[in-house]
Image (cartoon, one colour):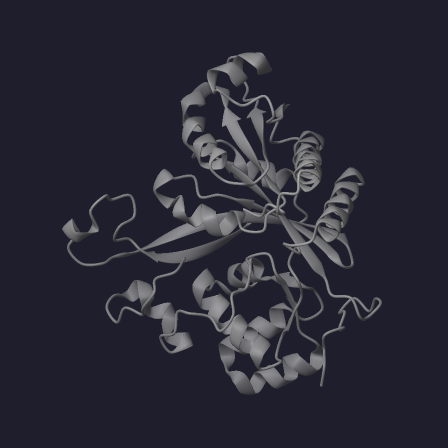
Length: 207
Length: 121
């Protein structure tokens, strides 16, 4: 029996359901889960991956006596856009020692938003470094925390040495409309990138 | 990335007992790839063991991503991935495509649909 065209909602059979994802990255405590929760149709869920701790954040694993297993948690949300289209939003684990997980999270993603807390701007260096060295379109979103120093976007761009090609937007990660605008910027940027790379005959970028 | 071999020591790796120690899935399934189970598939999954039946039940009536399956069943991601890949091979779940990674036209169409979906929110 073939269930390839099965649609539990009783819609048209034949075409499968397509899912896409956008990655929300940033340092620990920068508001990634808040951002996801502001727009997700479900309360953000957490999935856990087990990893062998040997070698994680350690330069010389041979000095580690015995293997230990550790848990890496990822928060994510969901937006069902149509019967056959679902968008997922994945937050990256905040702790820098779990960055090897990011490679799996960004694989096949539409793009990413790097969330920056203006009170701890240096926390953004490492996530930005990561994306500069990947082929994934990303935008920088400055999360406005109450009582945080207010900077002009261009001051932040200069302080973080963000390339002029990378869009930079202000956001309030608690506000649905503001988050929506961040995600729209990510997708628009991804489309522009894809178009210009296609025009130059480059292969389609994926993670 | 999961550990490459089942480690017989330690309570933290015990979840892999449900996969009989296998940590490599039969096929790689993206975090966001969605799966569905028809009522027939859910019924058949009863004979495939408790964990697979739980997974099929989660996917009945609503498409769920691998990440959601892991979260709702409280299984570690690597364990859920092994079981889900088995279930796809056993026709107990239907795997739908994650975002097409190749082809300019297809990718642009998908991005366009996501964009208008966001704007409609």
